[in-house]
Length: 190
Image (tube, rainbow, N blue to C red; front, side, top):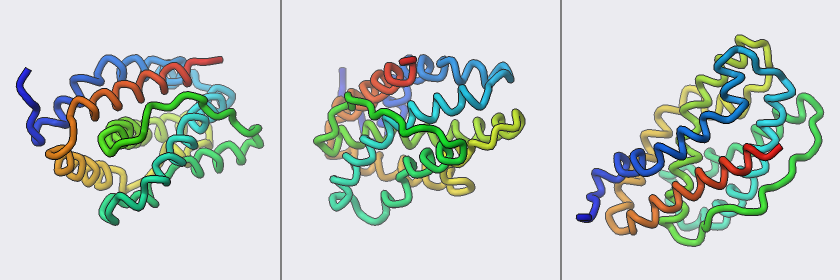
């Protein structure tokens, strides 16, 4: 297979992760939400699982923050506190933390995982509207960056494309796939 050019990295990532992205979207919370039958209890369970994955991921990302330029806006991209705020609003107990994260040691691995977790902000906008329709007020996390969601995603994609010219595209893709796989396994635990 010929090497992937930097301009093709996003297309390649979408293709490589599509099955895992689709599987993750088919979890019971999303199915109930799509059918208009989501409950606050199911939303709290889903938020707790997300926190359990996102908090340790963000802790790893913070360790690497000095390696990122200000243009990445990493400090604005930490969303675990939004999950905690949603959970505190309903007095939910502290969520368990996921014991297995994808490897996040190299820049390529970090960017692969970031592709998955930053991409989730786009779907969050849709979920926010559906939760509002259902009268469930737990929307801080899903609202994410609000009106900045699109611009932040575009900035992320541009920076990923620029950096991918000197990184292993295979390592970026493997990290994105592994992130989807581990997140799926964690979310779908009872």
